[in-house]
Image (tube, rainbow, N blue to C red; front, side, top):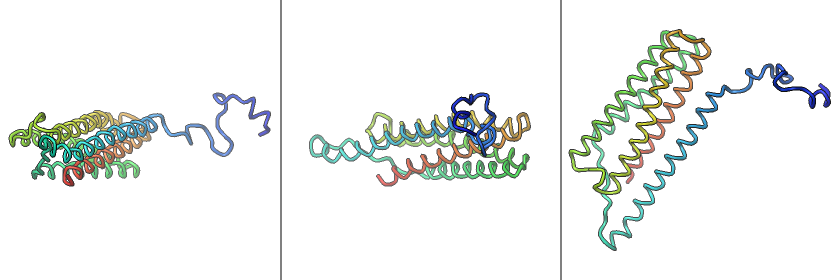
Length: 212
C-alpha cells in the first residue's frame, strides 16, 4: 500500500491492517481491557492502604515512648486459615473452569464455574464469622488502629469479591448455553483472572497480619 493510500484511507471503512486481518482479530475486547484497568486501579488502592498500615504500625514505637502504645496486633484464629483455604479452592475451581472452556468441555466448565462461585459465597460467610469471632474476643473496630485497618482491608476485599460474584452469575448463565461459545470462554477466562487477583490480594493481607 502506497503512502498516499495510507494517509487517505478511513480506518472505520478499512477491514484490517496488512497481515493482521480485521480489527477484531487483533484488538482485545473492550471488556478485557476494562478488567485489567480495573484491577490496576484496585491494586493501587490496596497498595496505598497496605502502605498506610505499615507506616502506622511503624510509628507506634515512637508513640509508645510519648504516651503509651495504642497498637495491638490481631491474633490468627484457625478460621482465618480456613477462609484462606476456601478462597484458594475457589480460585482453583475457576482455573479448571477456564481450561475446560478452552477445551470446549461445556459441562465441566459449567460445573466448575458453579463450584468456584459457591466457594466464593462460603468465603464471604466465613469472613463474617471471622469478624464475629474477633469481636467476641474484644477486638473491636475502635479499640486500636490495628483493628481498624484489618476491618477496613478485609471489608474492601470482600466488596471486590462480592462484585466478582455478580460477574460470576453472568458467566454461569453463559456457560449454560445462553450466549455464544466464544463469549462464554472469554467471560470464564476473565473471571478466573479476577479471582486469581483477589486471591493474591488476600494472601498479601494475611501475610501482612502474620508478619506483624
